[in-house]
Amino acid sequence: MLVQALVFVLILCPLVAAFKFSMLITTAMSLWRIIQRDFVKVEDQDKDDHKNLTPALNVLYSLALLQGGLFFYMTIFSSKGKTIASSVVTKYNFNDEVQARLSVMDYFRETRVGLEKDPSFARGRKLLTYAMQLLESKSPDKYLSGARILDTLLQPVEPMRLHAIPQLRERRILVKELLLMGPSSAGNQVQKLLWTLDSAEPYGGEEARELAARIVENLADELNLEECPRGLRRIGSLLEQPNLKLTLHGLRILEKLAADGDNHRAMSDARSLFPKIMGTVSPDRHQSNGGKDHDMWSNVARTSLSLLLVLVGSPGESGAKLRYQGKEAISATAMESILMCDKCDEDLQEKAVQLLQDQPGDEARKNFIAIMVHIFARGKKNNIRDWASKELDRLSEINPSIILQANEDAPATLTEVILDARNNDETRHTAAIILVKLCRRCQTMSDEHLKKLKRSLMTNDSMPKILGEVLKIKTKLEAADIEAGYTPREQSHDTKLMAFLVRLCFHCLHYLAIADKDLPRQLDEIVAQICLDEGKPVKSLETLMKEVYKLVEEKDPLIVGTLKFINLS
Image (cartoon, rainbow, N blue to C red; front, top):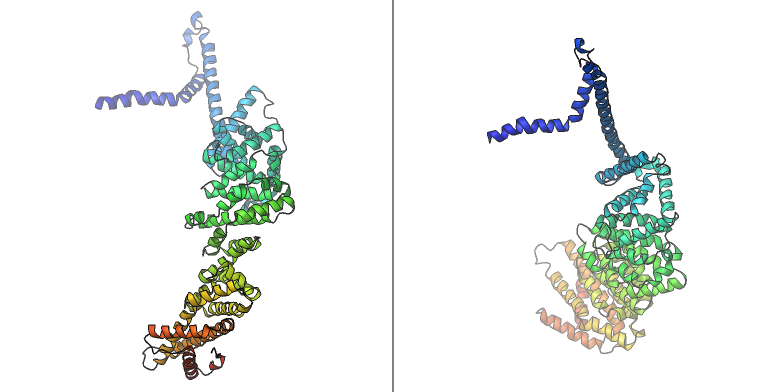
């Protein structure tokens, strides 16, 4: 062990030092010997064998000194090149500084080598033209380097760099001109970028695909799909990626393409386009990204719905084809998942509503109404529930049969809203108004829809639940004097609720009784069964209502006038 240490210290370390600092040592020695010219003793200078020694050594040491000087110049130049490369990376705001610095250094190196061979080599040569040359390379590494440079040159201006807007705008215009309107090779570069987007044909890995997606996104407003064979299919492949960033880039590319009416024809001919767009907002994808990535998914969904709205709103023959494809592809379930999500913002939900409303056909209308009923009953955000309630209220006024046709259990669902104490008074009141309107128009309904309404109200326990709730509140109020902790405020609230439910029952049953003379008997049987279930004496509906009227009059005379008794017999 000691011998190895001695060998390392006495032999290897000096060798490494000599190798590493050899140029420094030889240059220093040459400079010293040129200054200290004692090559030959004075008495030996005139001897023939020493006469040429001094000039020869002068030349030797001068050459060594020149070599050292060149070495130090190259070292300083290389160091300066790195500094310049760092300055370029900072100026153009490259994303990956390490890789960008390597790309810029390669540009400097190739430029220097070219200048050594041809002094005119740098004429017209820029970082941009270098990047475009790299895109033509078959080497994935060089292609990736060129894509990094182009991506940076095309990036939009950041707010903190507003002073550079004119310069950056000119640079972006130049990039677009060279790529889209340059020589024929430029067209090949665009095609190569499109190839890179295709999940089946990656060129340079995942990073290359993302870089190409960003570059194409910046060029998309100048692209014509007719001039890009299979371009739409390659762009569409981004929508199938699990990577949400790639999906978002793909949607933004399509959104820019859709802004140009000349591209609508090509888009209308692509039968797989709508299913791919809808796939980005599918309930499964929504749920899988409902956690930490929900904000990113919301951006994807918002862009997707905006794109769909543009496509289905297109004019002309292409627009008609796109609307037909949209009718087939747009999923009501996907829109419902957005509307029911408490994390989705109002703008996204408004776009989902607009898509649902604009869908043509009876089936789409049924889906729309069914979704509204579901949202009104179980929605998590007040603004979207308010919208659903207004739409249902409007439809119940115009044609309530539409609601029953779309969802025959709508009356039962509205009853759940009315009886759910977690809902505020306004929501419960709105549900009651819609339910009353459904019953009020029962005389104009077809027999089929009337049966659906009665089945939902009577057979599905809607009215029995309401009457049962009335009986429970009545029993509770009657025991108020002996029940501890039942405050006057709570009694007043329950009294108003009982009066509200009774009023609702009679409004609904009044209209139904006109269409069905046997209804009073059925209701008496229902009330009798409720009394038995609650362990109370059996009574008729009329008797129960009279007792309720009397109790309300005792508890709150101010609201007793709102009760309107209707003789059902």
